[in-house]
Length: 314
Image 1 (cartoon, rainbow, N blue to C red):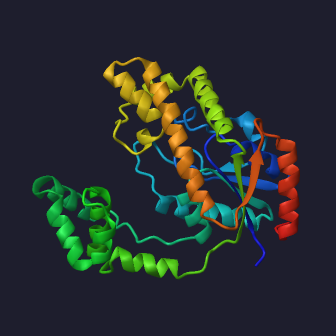
Image 2 (cartoon, rainbow, N blue to C red; image 1 turned 90 degrees about the vertical axis):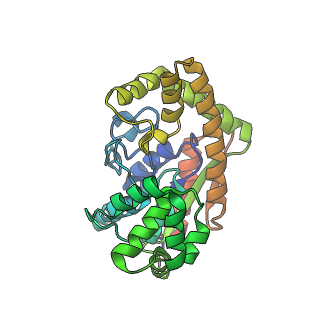
């Protein structure tokens, strides 16, 4: 089947946005971000959200679609992004999904339908109250009785997902395992051509990550984190778990030297890059473009364009 979607993925700091913009300019495309933290408003520097200049006149989607206090999820991402991709296709343009959140990319390509969240039912609050008052073991036992597969799969201390699984069952009469199996049986919504970026030498990627963290600090990441804290954004919320924000917030709140936080950001960014590479390498249909010490975007655009034409995507 001919692909109808271009995916540009890879580890953090590998040049995904720049290549996606260059290809969009060349191929009449629009960029759909697949970054779980660029969805948040007011979190620009630490998420490497592209500036208007970096966007190069190319329409970008799925940026700034949630407030930092919201618990944005992969289910909501797919719900929001599918109409965006369909709209780009309807306009006769090429959707270019660019980002490093593999979970978002895979579920968008699948067009996966998630078990519904019951709106304003109060179920979640009831279950959360039970967890506070009784502890998690009784809820886990209740889940084991109705959905033993989910109970076995989830960590005994994973309160969020245990409550979610119970909430789905109590609201719909179906277990979350049933919902997932039914969703996975549906054919993928899109057929992607996937290009992944990396460096030939790991040390070159580490150097690039370190340089980007220093650049973020020069651009004012510390002030961005301070502003979020001043606005009352809890350090415990999902948005503040983002690399760069979590470490600097911890240093600021503890009165430690900010350089301690910077060093931790560099370390966690490298660890995250390793996990991203592991995720993308599972896909045997990925076309890898490997940079030398410094990316050559003109050559990458040429190679990527050839892949696009050869695949029948355009």
